[in-house]
Image (cartoon, rainbow, N blue to C red; front, side):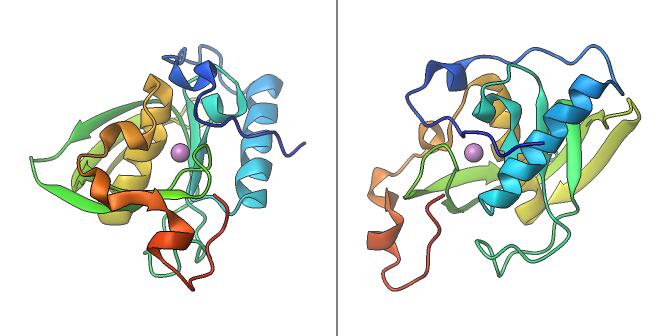
Length: 178
Ligand code: NI
């Protein structure tokens, strides 16, 4: 369909609590998912949430099934379209890692996330999704689902000495303007 504009931090549409999807397998939902796909691919993103393109619905896409040039060392996450997600941490263990966001271009920060996680929701046809994941996969899901409750990753940063511009933090590394 189309590569859409990605809203940037400061836009109040990124701060809303998104509405649940009530009708599955509709042309409107398919069109939204295609736009999310096209936009994520064009930006080399690891994931994208509907609120980031101004759509107030609980819809996220993430993963690729292929190596992502922005996260070349990350394990491959299966491409997933997830609707009305519910996240349940499995244990208290947290992991910290650097994170960027397409709505916060040029910046990186260290964000703590639950290491293990169960996520449930629906695919575009309304079939249930129920997975237990860990590591990078769990991090991506937590980041994307935060977008559905109006949370951007800088709000999760605990140590602002580990938050800054990617070109300064990682000089010499090719960094996308994500
Ligand atoms: Ni993001």
